[in-house]
Image 1: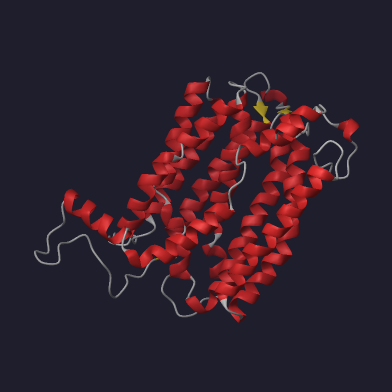
Image 2 (image 1 turned 120 degrees about the horizontal axis):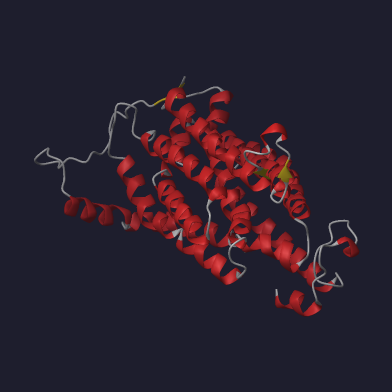
Length: 357
């Protein structure tokens, strides 16, 4: 049983505390690359695909912050963070299983909306590890966090994404139903979410903080009303003391901007790679990052964290710029080959299409 608010914990607790994040990260890959291919079965317009994926993320902008704020101020029989992880993970697991059997575009989008709304109720996935891992061990915790992050990406892209279009022989059951690679991917991820929910529910014990804020009025002792809650929420969240923290988070968000779900279409439609070749490109990058991640975790606990953060922002930016320049000016058709001859591509993009990207 993992117990929160300990001064020192075993490294196994630190690793297990990151498992919900790793499961969530695996599901995120489904909702970007794989879900892009699922949408493409019904609509072949990249603008429509990106519009759908964008608007489905809006519930999290409102629901997530409110529920994170609320999780600081409640206490239930099973804790204050666990309800915001267990219930959403069970619901998300259910909706993931429904994705590959959606009969049309609108049903699929409705399932995605339901999945995203359920996910908006699970922001405590980021908070619970900090209550398990004490400050003196959070460098190691961050390293394990990133290791599981890259492992999830490595497994998904090297093993799973390339099987999206496969059709599996079901033997004597073939007359009853068929199994596609798309269905297999979602039907593996759905139970993974459910199992993670049960691991958190049964394997973590939250200890009530000695001092904490509540949902009660400090004068009357009664529950605050909705209007008072909104006023207090706005006042606390937009307090100027958080300006530096918000700026730091904004920098991290800007740093992480990329093509998102359209990256899968860039590889497969624009550059002509197969799904497996696209996946291996991403997986190789994840494999390269794993040893650097482990080393960074040790460095963070030994040196100034802000300086390490600055360097880990600066160095990848330089590498990314150098790589983009290499692709644009050194490669004849402006696309990476990854050690494979361009003649084996599924469809060779024209120079005009390459320039457009």
